[in-house]
Amino acid sequence: MPKLPIYMDNHATTPVDPRVLEAMLPYFSGKFGNAASRNHSFGWEAEEAVDRARGQIAQLINAKSKEIIITSGATESDNLAIKGVVEFYKDKGDHIVTCVTEHKAVLDSCRALERAGKATVTYLPVDKYGMVDPDDVRKAITDRTVLVAIMYANNEVGTIHPIAAIGRIARERGVVFHCDAVQAAGKIPVDVDRDNIDLLAISAHKIYGPKGVGALYVRSRGPRVRLTPQMDGGGHERGMRSGTLNVTGIVGLGKACEIAAAGMAEENRRLLDLRDKLQAGIFERLDEVYLNGHPRERLPGNLNISFAYVEGESLLMGLNDIAVSSGSACTSATLEPSYVIRALGVGDELAHSSIRFGIGRFNTEDEVDFVTDRVTREVRRLREMSPLYEMAREGVDLKSVQWKAE
Ligand SMILES: *Cc1c(COP(=O)(O)O)cnc(C)c1O
Image 1: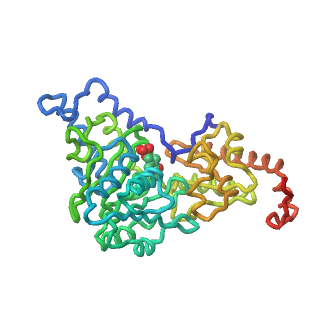
Image 2: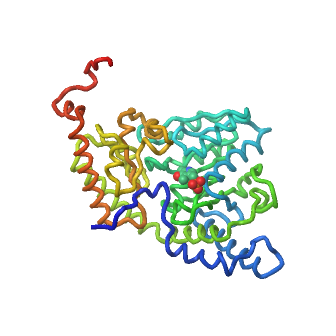
Image 3: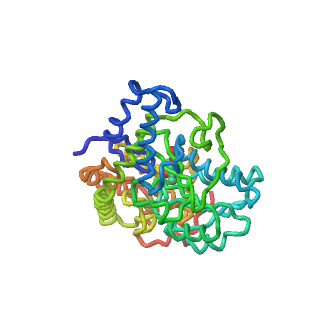
């Protein structure tokens, strides 16, 4: 019996890896210098630590150290990339191409620019697996387009977009390509050169690092990408992001990147085994369950399932010793079904009944077995109380039923 509660929501955040914590600890007290202090050893020590971390971050995505701009997390990285490009290239154009299943940090940055009259935005649809068609990107680009913003892998359904193909199209058309790689970098191989990526957002707390620190990769040549800073001040980070550096956080992010790069292949095999076991266990035991996301081109730790005739929220309540997310709750306090699941063409009912399992580095096979068992029992229990499920089982076509008005 595994220790409860079980955390299986690793797309939302991850625990700090003990090796990351250990690397960070000295920089809270003894080595507390300001990395911008140029005239004493305290400053040099901090700067050295930041330089090392910058190298570790760069290596994870095949970039150069000087191309890494430290931020407070991926929300800031996405804001800086999108607003920074649109403002800097305003004489060239004002059009953005993005997609409907992007993270709110991207969608709301685009909306803010639209509302301010600074940009027009094309929101590309996705197919039933949540994937963008590179041809749609090609067709959407106009002479006014200054930015393509498509995420590497989706945080709800795990679908991995054909990023190299999209990058090639953007490069051919001379349009800057920003990629929110928060769920991909450190999980699957990401290479800014192979993928023709110009700007890329990552976040430490999604890869077993601390919360409140992230980075934006900014291509320095072939072509050099320019940005209007969104934070003014001391001119840190080559003028692109002022503010005293969060040295402990940066050390943590660097270490998290190093660990992720070194163990990626092995960890992926392990996560895939656990994920496939969970998926098979649920699908073998229950009828009327549907996979959301791409069957193959999907993050190894991701499993998003709709359990027909069951409210995701009720299911979550029944699973009080397991931490997972539902497609009803993740957007806000309102019970709107997830915009990501809906964008796949899944109806409201099934979107409301979706649960996201995020398997991570510290989950065990015991936990997967426990979760399989708890979920199947809870779904059966809820369905036993559902008249709709009874009717469907008796062969009633629910779509043809004339419901009596209240
Ligand atoms: C978590 C997440 C973000 C936001 O990152 P923060 O560092 O928490 O601001 C952005 N994009 C995606 C895809 C995410 O999963």
